View 1: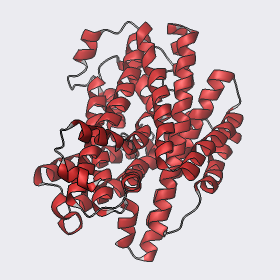
View 2: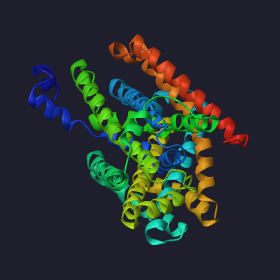
View 3: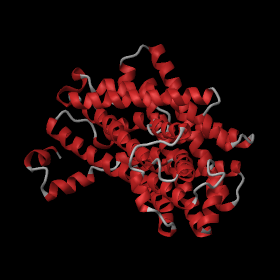
View 4: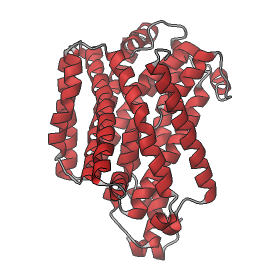
Length: 417
């Protein structure tokens, strides 16, 4: 592989085929950007404010590209995951405390994703939420078994397959929905209409970056490509990483924008679209039961894929910070319990999603700030350290995301969100 990178120009057909074969890890991480929480937020934005906030999704996707590129870059250059690098720089007590907050965030994210999958099964088959949660747990365990027994590459193919289903499920509705493309183009101009749209935009931007995806991508890239000290190979992998991230997040961004366009064109002013069940009912009423079923299938794929990836991320966090490896299938069995308890005692699914969002907001700085710091460290990154323009852009993005999540956290805790 190294000789190929050295002996052939990057633009040759063989090098392009080699580059294509290096893609995959970013598609796993990208699942975090099309989870059930995104479904509710995007449809609510489109139904409530039409095409006004299309620009927010464009900006959010650009931010996601930067963050996920840096995470994978860290793993490729150092041969270490973000949790492992943090553990190297912390005393034992610090590692345990940091792991506890990261574990709570991962559990909260998993909770939202299991609930989303359970809601999809209720929508499609009328199953009780608890039964749906059990099925989501069983199927996600089977998906993780692919990684445990067959390795990362087959797991990537499974996740890419689910991402394809998600894309079809949420994009296909546009085929029967009369989108006002002139109005959609107008949504590319940054603007607001009142404080409510400012809050919603902050929520869409601030919640774009998922902490568990940041931790995970550094491990995914390293585990997939191995550890190398050859600058030529690292440059090839970084190039592949850029392509991987761009393609994966273009897909995720397209899905999110499609959801907003669908709601803006077919559900303007419809009440109840701030919940997933309400959004589905409105879609069925406006576009018919077939589109409603396709939407439900996309939501189910979203829940299954995102909870599987979330569990994978939790294992990477624990292994890196505590240097303790728990088999993925054992971890899946344990981490599904909180979600099943929430579903079993009848907690309002929307309330559970809101609370999980609050916890996610708390966890953002713990992942994002160290990522920016480590990738800008010359002793650690060597010749691959972030150059000054990238450092400046990264600092602006980190400040904005942390600030937005701080505002959202305050509003949610004060009852104003």
